[in-house]
Amino acid sequence: MLAIARVLCALAAALVMAGGATANAETVLRVALHSDLKIIDPVWTTALISTHHGHMIYDTLFAVDEKLAVKPQMVDKWETSADQLTWTFTLRDGLEWSDGTPVTAEDCVASIKRWGAKDGMGQKLMSVTAELGALDAKTIRMALKRPYGLVLETLGKSSSNVPFMMPKRVAETDPNQQITDTTGSGPFIYKKDESRPGEKTVYVKNPRYKPRNEPASGLAGGKVAKVDRVEWISIPDPQTQVNALLSGEIDLIEIVPPDLLPLLAKEKDIRIFVTNTAGRQYAMRFNVLHKPFDNPKIRQAVLYALDEKEFLDANVGNPAYYKVCKSLFPCGSPLESTKGWEDKLSGNTAKARQILQEAGYDGTPIVLLHQTDLPNHSNLATVAKPQLERAGFKVDLQAMDWQTLVTRRAKKEPLDQGGWSAYFTSWGATDVLNPVSTAFLSGACDKATFGWSCDPELEKLRDAYAFETDPAKQKAIAEQVQLRVIDYPTHVPLGQFTTPTAIRSNIVGLLHTPALALWNIEKK
Image 1 (tube, rainbow, N blue to C red):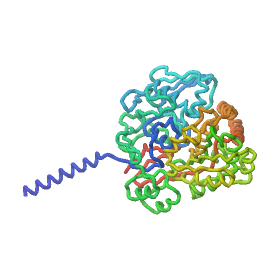
Image 2 (spheres, one colour):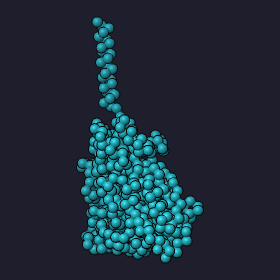
Image 3 (cartoon, one colour):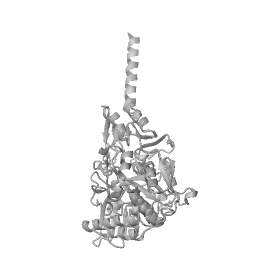
Image 4 (cartoon, one colour):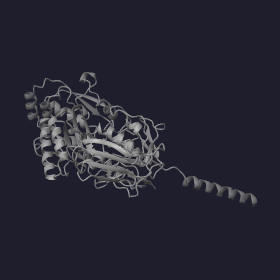
């Protein structure tokens, strides 16, 4: 009997230990995202995957909530002088970097300046800023040359490029060079030593992060990390992603192609969730530095040659998830307008040929960069090629993965030395709501984003929009921008779409956000 009692006691002790181990087990969230992470600097690049990375490890002064209203984030309070020229921001108490040092106003000033040298909205804000400095360890002072109506909207920008706050030593890196130090003050810490390109990217909960007291809403509120560890698992093939989700190997797929949705819809353990209800806008971006697209008239021919609906059918497929929209600014937004674009984007080959002939197109091939690995994007260039060829263009289609394209598009070299003519991407609708926020509308030449559009008239119109406070007058200016882009095309908008996310039913707390947020998520 004594021996049996000893065995029972040993079993009980083992069960207690096992229960304790279970109670203290690390909670790991495994997700498959739209791309592998290779560039860790979300200011140097506009790539969405790098922005997702930024939201994991950095925080921002302001952020947008679920209704896209700008709310304070790292900022506790702010004041504006009576003449609207001086803005003072006070940081919250207790903010720390992941290395244990306090967040200071000097860190934030350096971060704003570096971001402001790269981002279109940031450049506009910096152009009207007379002075930006730290009054003390917690207070930032911004003195403007003239009142500017988009200060908070700019500092609360939600997607590429986001004004993420970094330590001063990191933020003093040349904005045209990539950072290597990933010290942040966000809800997670990037584990470079455990991450492997093409395999996985690893983050752990930041024990020093101090969330706001409010509930999470959009990208604002309390960013509470409710799992211990997040792993971005690299699975390029969508079908393989779905199989991994069904088997429980991963917990979330960021973007599910519509043709695979029926397979998931019948599974009781899977839920479909659209995080970004505002959606995204496809765009073809021109490089204006080299022939043939150094000629605005030749770029104009593209506006007639392309058929927007063919892009949406080939890359989204299900009309429930896309919208044909002949507006430079998102349909459903305050600045929606088809003015000047009614006869564009419908595949008018005859008109495109006529314009090409008038422009003196000499047959220089278009080097068209074709990303092959992004769901909802992999058929953009392949749809464009025959449309452009029917109009009379010669097209050199060059296939590559998205991260290679992201690196390639930064090259200004001629076409025969690794340069490019055009590439396709998409922007969150919240990124292209107005002439100032839309990065591709910058006409700032070398300061403009990849493609380097250079047009003083566009810059004058963007300035006029930024300083106007009357919504009716703002809309009139936006329509002038829309008409100007016909004469000086910077890019081609190619319709709107939403991207369904699939999650296992034991995952709760996923937020409605313009960029993926992995805080507030619990794994039951």
